[in-house]
Amino acid sequence: MGWSFGEERILWPASVLAGIVMCAAVYGITRKVSSRCIKGYDGLSSMKKVEWNNRGFSTFHALVAAVVSFYLVVISDLFNGERIIDKKSWLSDAMFGVSTGYFLTDLVMILWYFPSLGGKEYLLHHGLSMYAICLALFSGKAHMYILMVLFSEATTPFVNLRWYLEVAGQKTSNLYLYNGLALFGGWLAARVILFIYFFTHMYFHFDQVKSIFRLGLYSILTVPPALAVMNMFWFWKIFKGMLKTLSRRKRQSENGKAD
Image 1 (cartoon, rainbow, N blue to C red):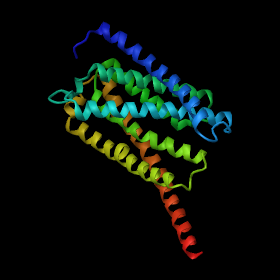
Image 2: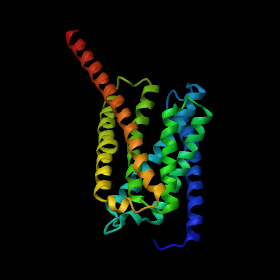
Image 3: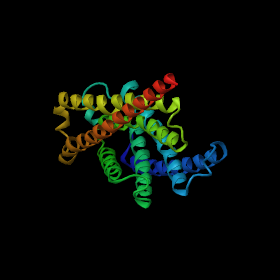
Image 4: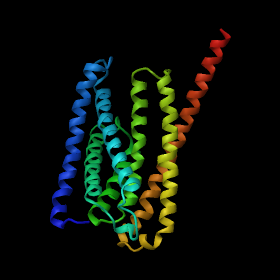
């Protein structure tokens, strides 16, 4: 809390720009490293290469966001004590700026290549995420709750690895199976159980929640539930996919024993 509004006005655009630069840099690094080290990358279609590289900076942002969010909410003492709804730090501001830069970059790419990089649900997800992050950034309110939602990005590396393995023709590999199980467990923890805790925490601190400005109150009562519904929809698809993979593995095992 110990910085001026003038310093914030420098930090906010600088961190957004840093997020955009990060995406561009990781996109280029992913392209160069994959071309040199990943067999079959050069044989992909141009659109597959774009998505491959896009998922590179998506994974990088997810790891950074998860680490910073976990540190601020769990390890640091930032949100200890009373009036947690008003607490923030330069690091939470910077993380929100970087994430805004990421979501903005990814949203532009999704729109440019629409619908190859994602359909309408991705537009909705990114739009709601950017709105909630920017509102918290500019108002200085509810940083802990936005960080909790941002931590759910921790599941993104598993989603992207599954896609990489599918493109590489490794759907029958053990790594694909183990990653699918990790994705199911991670999604359950970070996008289902965590959201249950999120809403429970809001309920027991609703006297603080309802004290913020009206738009913020309406937003925190609508945006997280909307994201939770989307998470449950995707969780159901992940669950069905995991059952399908396990069933296929079981049939293959039984056929091998029969032979």
